[in-house]
Amino acid sequence: MAEILRVNQASKAFGENEGRTLALNGVSAGIRQNDFVVILGPSGSGKSTLLHLLSGLERADTGDIFFRENNLSRYNDRQLRHFRRLHTGFIFQEYHLIPNLTMRENIELGRYLQKDGLDIGELADELNLGGLEGRFPHELSGGQKQRVAIARALIKKPDILFCDEATGALDEENSKQVLRILQRARRKYGLTVVFVTHNLAIAQMADQIVKLNSGRLSEEIRPTKPLDVDNIDWG
Ligand SMILES: Nc1ncnc2c1ncn2[C@@H]1O[C@H](COP(=O)(O)OP(=O)(O)OP(=O)(O)O)[C@@H](O)[C@H]1O
Image 1 (tube, rainbow, N blue to C red):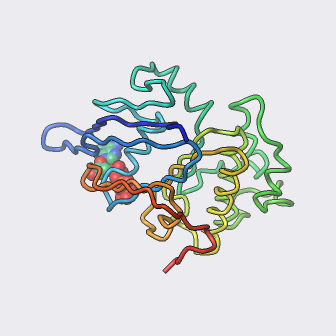
Image 2: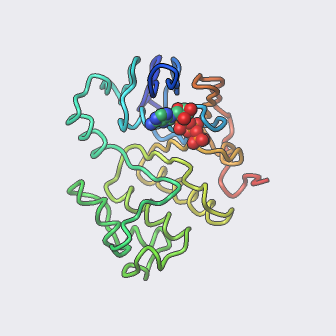
């Protein structure tokens, strides 16, 4: 498969003088279309920063980020917004649903960013959310909230879904449900998934594992036989 994303020698620092932290230090890696890519590393190793650079949420200080043949580092803010709107979806540990909107309205928010997209009813059924359309976030369980967040991200059919500790607040069963949904979406829509996690079990499913340590790429692995979500050893 062709590469959909590439990061070349990217560095990113925060703060100044004694307060300066080099969050990423000359990281290079390529991500193939349709892969499930897991970014692993200890706390503070730069995982979220790498995700933010790859997704155009933040800019690298030095180095280049390519989406297909386009160099995002050369994009102006408007072009970068357009890239994010058209090609990327995000899910986070904390769901980020709008509390005073119903489930259906929260999902519709994702669609308004793009004209054509998936059918909301079909998506709700697929994500096991049928019948909950009128509920507000506080009336949903954690697993249901995360599935609403996934539906909101998928409704516009993004090319790449960026997940930052997306299962971090969920138990094993709900985590596996989320992972099953992502696997189905990869098969059905050709989605590429970039998944930041502390959970080593999830790496058993990966087509590619990117390991960071102190802002540097410490290891890059492409397992020959990624496991299906139902075969992983959760530990
Ligand atoms: N906006 C920011 N301002 C200042 N420092 C930051 C900022 N974002 C990240 N950092 C610092 O950069 C380093 C890498 O942070 P990052 O969030 O990428 O790590 P991480 O591997 O995702 O950590 P965790 O697993 O704890 O979420 C850390 O030392 C962090 O404190």
